[in-house]
Amino acid sequence: MKLAFEQKMMGLTRISLGFIFFWAFIDKLWGLGFATTPAKSWLAGASPTMGFLSHASGPFAEIFHALAGLWWVDGLFMLGLLGIGAALILGIGVRIAGYAGALLVLMMWSAVLPPANNPILDDHIVYFFILLAFTHMKVGRWWGFGEKWSKSDLVKANPILE
Figure 1 (cartoon, rainbow, N blue to C red):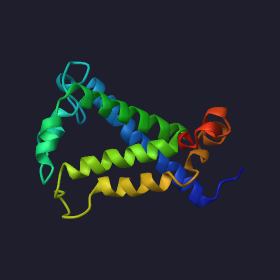
Figure 2: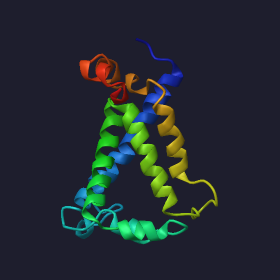
Figure 3: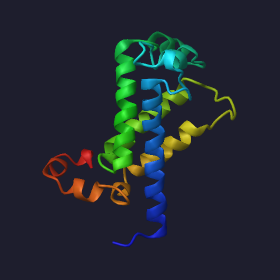
Figure 4: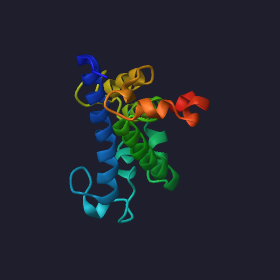
């Protein structure tokens, strides 16, 4: 099947956004020295949420401060980064990854209110809209495994997994 220009661009957008989530997981897991130093990696025993959530600002700061570093918050956060990233890269489970990713970036945005560089918008909100758009588009089928995935019995029985 020949893809139209907009399908190619949305496929690349999906894969690119997937790598953003997946890379965040890898860097926080091993501490590759980009956003996370080796000493602050999850495998070194550090919390992947402590730094960000302990510096939360705005009306929800107290809630985020209380969540910072909790083992189950760390686990859910890392599982979310891995799952959302892998789903978007592969083009499978894009609908649920879109909803989960939109929720994750909305929570991250709400932890830094007001945003540092713009009083209303930042990259989290742009990602939020893109991820929600993915939930109603067939972007997993454009340079991904979504077509084959959507024909599986599991997905037919559970359309949210498409």
